[in-house]
Length: 117
Image (tube, rainbow, N blue to C red; front, side):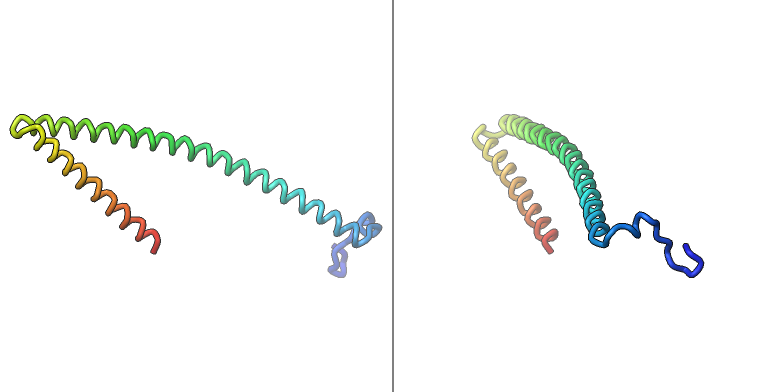
């Protein structure tokens, strides 16, 4: 800084026109913006890869859960069939499965409505 408080301007800046300075500033701003966009895209791409792997694992876990519930339902029907006719045991199993399904959809609707509000 100069003694009177003004910013010292180098000789190279004094020799350049205002138009040149604005053009150089715009070029530098574009370069910075492009760099920021590249970084954001790289981060988003990595986030999508992680989300994709997580979604795949959740779907696999969901498929295993469906299989487990199905096997438990078959076991319950087989146990009931010892005491009642097979068709009654299957009807009871189906009604139980329907009750669980409806309850799950009602719960999902409530959660969706709460998130909406």
